[in-house]
Length: 178
Image (tube, rainbow, N blue to C red):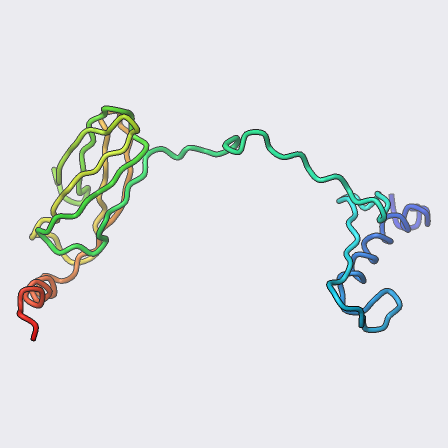
């Protein structure tokens, strides 16, 4: 249907609420003068198709009875308690979403056989592993992978400082303060 074949009545019903909504929301009222009335401007609500009467707002959509409906479970997740650990100092890796009583191993995929430790997931599927970053790791970001016996995996990362900075940080902790 082209503009010319659309009747004036249909164009009025569609464009009227849209123009009314734009004018009501602006600081200039429908009469064209700046609004001096106290309080917020009135907004006319129209349905998305623009065919409802502006005096009768469209009904609100029904609430979703199940708020978890449509939520996609992405599987296990992993986090670390200290994203910038010092080498050879304990850091805790937390995992969630594993099967209850599943054995979970923390690994460094960048290193061949880079196992950091393992543990068993609790009844809620969460696991907490205390691991240490090896002294021989280079500075920079390193992925820590949690791998369950079912094949489920979760990944997080740690960031290591240069080795000299690690040693200076240790010395600063040890040095007596006056």
